[in-house]
Image (tube, rainbow, N blue to C red):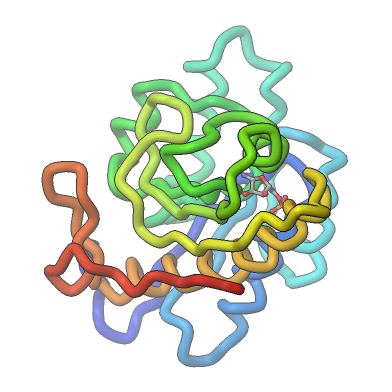
Amino acid sequence: MAVRHGKKLRLGVLISGRGSNLQALIDACAGPDYPAEIALVVSNKPGAAGLTKARDADINTRVIEHREFTDRDAFDGAMDAALHEADVELVCLAGFMRLLSRGFCDDWRDRLINIHPSLLPSFKGLDAQAQAIAAGVTVSGCTVHFVRPDMDAGAIILQAEVPVLEADDAETLAARILAQEHDIYPRAVRLIAEGRVRVEDEQVLVDGARARPAKIAL
Ligand code: GRF
């Protein structure tokens, strides 16, 4: 995605709840040198705590409740319209708890990213941290990836690893992973906004190369 000189990339952030990743993006965007700005936050839940975080930062918000639509396509169509109305260029899912339709994913292909609390392709879906504990892995982490219609699928942009400790439960592991989410999500958005990311054969290239710096938070 090429960025016009001097112009910040306009983000649309979709949330359903707490909004700590949204907050990490808000904080990053507050930096004068950060190459992106949040144009709109959309929540499918009117009570999402993330909406307050957006309003506190003077960011435009919309509540689009999925329950008010007869089907997924109609709901996704309303979100698509809101995003276009706000001139959004990159959509960031941040704890957005709805599967998106194939049409939406295709329309926003390579302009739609997600953060997931595991080292994908392991532990897709809900309760990824509990899945990691149950599987007995010693390393887990988080992933920022381009979104495809299949759940938690798509070319990987950045990952961070964290250790899984013997004393961990899903909650303590989630907290360790979350700290890394807040670091890599803004970094991934920056790479995209700087026009350094390309997808080729479903692999992400940064600066034309497949190798990305591995982030290991021990
Ligand atoms: C995060 O763990 C994210 O990886 C997952 O949902 C959670 C959202 O948390 N997709 P928050 O709303 O950003 O605090």
